[in-house]
Image 1: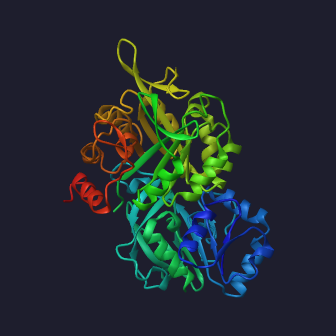
Image 2 (image 1 turned 90 degrees about the horizontal axis):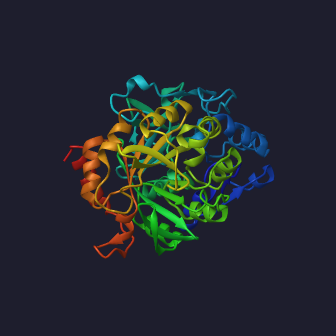
Image 3 (image 1 turned 90 degrees about the vertical axis):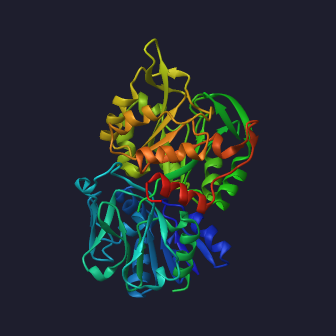
Length: 203
Length: 260
């Protein structure tokens, strides 16, 4: 059973619809109690870093989620700012991150862009698989929808499993043990995103 | 490689979907949710939905409608119409919308864009500029309240201000070309392109896929939005929701980017 964390940000329903079409059980978790019984978690996100951290704190789900993911080792997938929260800190905010995957969230340096537009990185772009991982298996010519000005720079290069080119290569998919994250929005990326979410459900 | 975006733009009026000409003369083209379902099947790049009543009538955004649009949309959704404070922005994002378009409120109170960007992040803050040529000199001017009132502002100067305050995208919407299907206003788009590094989405005038290809040839990475092109077929404007197939779209983009 997949719990999609409903902490106020991100399109929870889009994930639930995809899993419904895939005939895989998923539900929205709105409280710490809702989390028990799930075998894996999705942390969605649209919004600025501090708003996302505050919202997760206010939801009351953070301690329970940390226990399930860190102590019990259940799989979690963070999406966009949901993934960025896994880092230790962000250029975008003042609050600390969850620190589940060591690294920081950095703003793209605009001097690297030779053409217009610069930021945000907005639209459909390719993902190159740099470390083989079940999450990214069997997705032909993967392209996904991106909408962001900040990216994850993991401290350990082994945590970068997918890269994307935008004014240079940046990490677009991270993984460390049971913790996974995508900078792009699989829930809004048509059949490519559906394949990735199916992979996550079957990890 | 980042690709240009080809984006249908749908207008909501009296709860239904309409298409206008020069911002007037709305023609009913169907049910919004039904249109979204068709665009899902066609795997469109993004969708823009603008409620053209909310601002003019001073109404609150229709949250029930936004919720059902966001729930139904399998592609990124930008919603606009009647958004003028942070509470509304938060609520719309929380309903599952990726980007919120702000028009009149940004022009009346530019600082609203700074507050919006701080809360949502720039990536979700879209400024829509409704632009018309006015006066003896036919100068470009930004209009508000769904094209009914002039702001007296030049869009080319105003766009710099929007970028400095934290906007994440500029939709350049030509009132003069709306619904005419005779091509984008390329000189207007170029004037704005020269003044900002933000992503731009062109709207108003697209009458064929060749117009979209021409836009991409000229500007590279850009959003090519269109209303009539994706809801009408033929010279009698028969309603038919349509969008290029993936193969056709890829070929168009490759040709436009000079990679064919």
